[in-house]
Length: 256
Image (cartoon, rainbow, N blue to C red):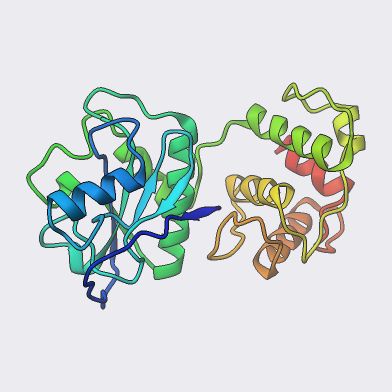
């Protein structure tokens, strides 16, 4: 998961002492950058700056807003105990793109694991407001939070793996989203200490099939949590447990 540092300038902020829930929002607009939201909150609303801790764009990019440690300005009565995630769009009328949902879900899982959070809600669950909108997939967020599960498009995942193999290793694969002998033959060994998009794709699939990779989620770093997840998968599938993603482990990932 890549969180883009927005480097915004804030006024006085207070430290949050408790973090027991995640609250989801929409700004009820499209095309707004985090800088524009920050300007609205700081210079028109006269707050210390943007009230949300994170902002997720329609294309799936994640931006850091108000410092994660600080009390937010997003939900009266809950600001001092919650982290806020705002998703670009007007979900009174929009439908959420898969890229945005998955990025936000990955962020939510990361925050859940980091703080031991068990509660997620929309703005309207705690305050009299339509936010985050009638079309916002709130129940899907809540349901997926129970098992750390991302909505997963299997064919798109294979396409991404094929693309990474082409970019990094010049494999010459047809990026068609189908698993076949050419794709299997092009796979490479990935082991502890690896970093990058290929590791992140492995982590995403492990999470999808029920293997936690640790509290940081799919962060693209093959650390102890990912190593342990690979070992568990290999043990469960009786393919020899060495913690390295090699041909047999790739085969399980492609076919599970």
